[in-house]
Image 1 (cartoon, one colour):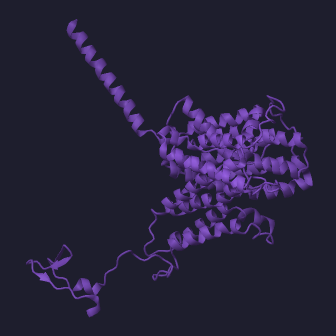
Image 2 (cartoon, one colour):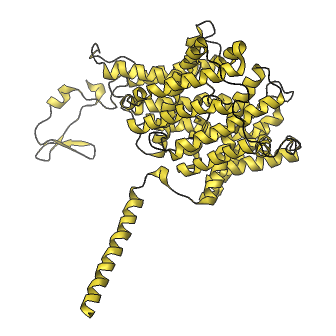
Image 3 (tube, helix red, strand yellow):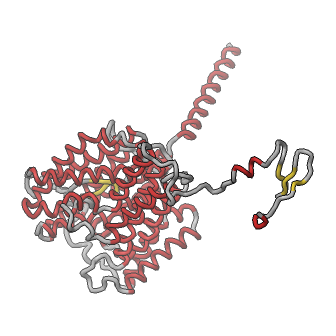
Length: 508
């Protein structure tokens, strides 16, 4: 009996040992995006994500509501519907269900790429025509996602680096606009007071990042937004008096603006927008995968795109529009180093709550745009820096990669440097290329295919724009060396250890 008990104890100990080591192995092999930080950290970092993208997610319904001639109450319903739909889309993208969701830290919200198209559609059929076009075009987009999910091999570091860099650069005007006040019709737009408030917020971010602990550094954006808003309140630059006005709770109603109408011309126009959205979302998924340090294969990309399209199909039922990943939140992941998808999922819960609790939305809306602008400079600049870091891994020796980078980024900057560049072109051209991100992505993909995949016709004499090798040596110099010759301390010796004189270049 005693011997059996001892043997049973040993077996039990072996089982405990095996299970313990299995847990350690699972933890060691866990993906960075699957890290669980706890409720407190999720709430803090999730709120930080919401504050970062809040201005962007409410901008589209504000613009479309005004263009469609809605009153203040109608525009408010569009805003809350967009928050609610964005929260649901974010949860689907981060948590995921079979075949839907990339399970990466990506915040979803109303896509800005279709604003011009949706304004044009509203002029003929109003909000119902927009909603119908979004539903129909998104269904088509969902059907073609398998095609897009097969393009990962055409997104090497050369292409992803270009796209990530361009995302950061194209967002910088947004940061500047926020820093100036965020409302070009306001009398204080561009005032020194707004810009100084942005500068103070930027300084706070930098100081907290340098002087704080690791936890404070990761929360530097959120803390800077809170402190900056407090300073603005003391200076009379923000107003919380409207927080109490309006309902505390309001669930979004289905088809509040009427049942969708389906017009062929509107659907075709919106499908072009969907194509651009798929390109941008693909770039964002690959970009955040690069930043997080996890592999994005065709299946994961396809799951992410399907979540994007499914969210865009469902959103109009609540009164919202096409959904896509928010590039500024990709920057937040890079700045904070917080890669957990559960943090972003918590941000999605905040967005759902904002959609159900308009009072919370009014609190967040009281954060001055200038404060957001100061934080945005760090956020968006970090995205560009991450792209540059990715491009540093690319081989530029005796190939055309330098030309691809130069042309693609330059092409992506055209709509940023000159927003009216495509005004005289057909509407479909302006829809595709008005976004610097989609412009750079399409050019990078095309040039990478042309020079690095379709090698037929490539010259064996590289362009003068191609980067030469860092070191070269003439063949005739190598031919003069004998077997056993070696270098030591900058001098050349033969096999017997005798120094071989080296003639200076000028003596030739």
